Length: 475
Image (cartoon, rainbow, N blue to C red):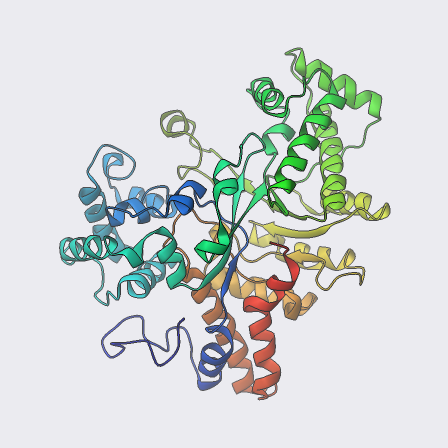
């Protein structure tokens, strides 16, 4: 657990104990109310097989660079050849290519994250660069062989209490089923992500449904049997501890159609025919409502990550596949369809706990006000606007999200930060968020905009850091 007393060697370190904390109020809020809280990381893309096996990584590259498209984009921008990013170069060569890149990331959050992670996990104070890279590589690889730096050991160092990975409906959940959290001292849950069953206009849609039919044991011959197959997987996930779903969509669809029309649209696509834009939107609307009602029945939390423009570079997509660093912020319309979808579920009292995330900062106030339309007093913070996501999970993005939520809602009900990461070294991002949070409140305490009542403000900080998430999620 991080405390003011156990941060060592602060004299020469870039990551000092006051890092991002600009006055005594911010420091007191952080060290007394935020830092002592455990971490509930309720959305990430960690590989559960490595948690179950408690993998011992051989090199820092394996745990730090593989799959990290934030770093990959920075390296490409600097002119680093792809061989040293996702290609055939050795782990050491890839690390040294990243070390060469780091000095050029000044004012990018990667500069902060890199040195915060080196400090917290490995007590490395030296700035990472081309000169320091070889010795840092050797030292961290040495430390990674220590038992306490196994996969679960790294999580334990950051006082992680629970993680929630993300799985497709096809996943057999073998690793989650084999995992004994009581022995490991860490809760691991999963989130159901059925987007491939929703995106009916995708080229390989029918191939995916064939796989879904095989896994569920339901022959998917019509729209009703598709719903039956999805419900079978929802039931299976629920039986194995799942209490959340997650959707990564450009925007929500809203184009109501009759049941007969939806059945005809599905049959047309199952026969291999192309659909019009309207037909695709009508199907997506219907299946999202069905899923939303099913989530409510199970008492799940539903999450919607909206606004990414994915796979922009088709040449590199063909070469490397998706999720390799070719996505950006989209400018999709969000408000009307999102409102209609939530209203449809709410009108039949089937709107479950919901978290909305936007990727376009121009939509901040849209999302901050949207959640207030559907908080009905039944649950504290029933509908949430999620933390700054992806391109927005940095200091400026976090502050803008916190300010908009404070101005237009109740930031005191906020369930706080998550990593959304594939890396076991990303958990200091919770510390980063908590420091930003405490500094924001601390500045206003110093200026007189907030009362200098440490118990009052400190409770809000502790709630956002941990207590609200603990009460909101059922792991």
